[in-house]
Length: 379
Image (cartoon, rainbow, N blue to C red; front, side, top):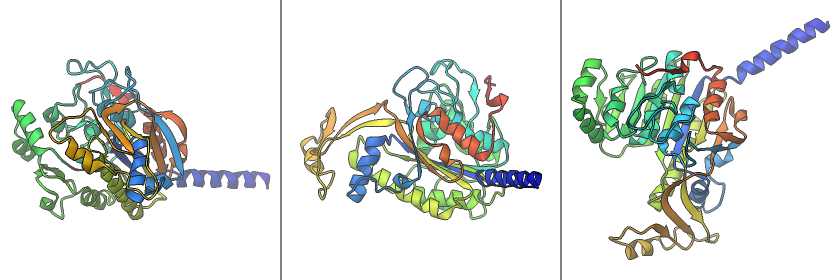
């Protein structure tokens, strides 16, 4: 009887462990949304602290954002750490810390997206900024200089691992095209030769196209792009990995805070559409930004005085924006950022941790281990 009880207990534990495994992972990346920015966005959008949807999630950690050699990171090194589990140098995309920015490649670091590709999951990268810029590019490319947009984008057609990103949407078409021309490459000719057209707008994507690449010159409707991605990625019975970035830099303070509020609304919408029993949702930032809340009262708009400040500084480039409640410098900062999560594996998001741990949390949620080929020499 005792043996039967132990067997039943073991079966129960195995079933529970299986139930906690994620089939899908969605990484929400608010670029530059440090703790002060998240707090200010709640006050700006809802008039009270801790009213953002992501602030209601059950599991929370503070994530260190330092690089392999500096206390303050850029988006390239910050996102590389999140998607590869390794710290690198500023300006470097998914190559290891031996890389010399703009001069010498280090070893290639396999990203969580590339692990998913190797396991035949579907993958997606969505952003409202240049799709070849640092944050999205760290998911699918390996270069020693984040400004090499042409080289970065070409790696979509010649992926290091798997068959490449399935669904991709962002902006920056002209910048990418111009950069590719300097390499002697033409975007339309390359995409045609590879059999993967790069659509100019979301509206151009045929209903039956399951692996669309969309690069616009005009601003992109990110909620519509996310819906397009989810509709296609969710059809894969093996699951999917999806990264969605929304710019949250507050050098333009109203635009930045509006972006965080809008992103939070998108995240709520996504959470309502996916199966939370099988999908890990992870929200974080690649780095913080120099915003300080030093005044203000309940019932007053957080951005009181912005119109007056803007008029008084028209045609100038002041060192910082100073309002009665807020002061914003146009700089990255080095303090920890929040990481918050819900869904299977989210319980591992707690306490203080390096940003590299977020990669391992996603891997563990999916039941995967890092492989020996996770780091290899450049080809």
